[in-house]
Image (cartoon, rainbow, N blue to C red):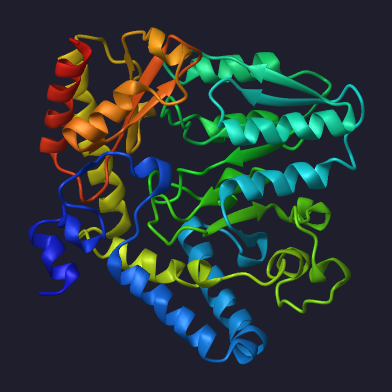
Length: 403
């Protein structure tokens, strides 16, 4: 029975389709993703082709294969292939934008980030501000949160006449909130450039870049698209494209790498010798994961979200708390507040997270947010998860929190 046929009978597919340890409840897809075994096989075939004749592969076969992968990715995320450059991860995409904009920033200019942002990207903003004399302004909104209007209110209150760039997540990492990015882009562009850290978006939520209209969007392919690790992209709107360069300058800077798609491809397609096979396997990841549900990718997104809401509901009931966010701000990851822990002030890693792993064989993230002793538990839902995984987590929490 093929994968597509099997999916019609039981679209929550066996964990063995992935290389995941079946004795563990894997509830942390959001952090690092997980790649189905057939996609890893595709990547291995690309590696064998590359290593069988590295010179021929790099000089003759690599660029056409990359262009084909880019066209498939562009079709999936709704944009012109010329607007896409491949990068290794979303953090690299954020750094490329910040580094490129440093030539235009002046002392007193402002970069707006949010208090829910990813730490690595916050660091990139701080370094660019230090180099240019710009100032980082943090827009605040709460968690628990009543609705997406609080996000709009918080971000717009932080924007001033000095704001040059707003960095905002499509789906936040610690608090796992789907943010109203389209509304923010509509309110800010073109006067204020918007950089969307969409690390979690493709494959999790509806995602169409040309409709969104942001200046810059970077996202991972290795998370919810389930491509191999090391695959991500940077989208740059046409009017911003000529001024963007990778964080690592290479042959394309003076046009010495003859990519086919204009400035962005010339700059990003070759930033030094690397293993490009994660990028080349992206089309196979799209086909493989989309084929796991009878309704294709819309069915994948819907079923993962429904399972996530069910899992969050189990935890909310077990913890005896109210919903920390409305359902319409939840995708395939969700966070719930946990009782405060003084241990967080003395440990890099939360002892609860280690207890879940070592005593219960559960992988789930426990974050410090916004600062000790406050903490959050974040769950994920992917096709290999079952409702029983969240019931087990609820039992584990009841036992561990009673200690």
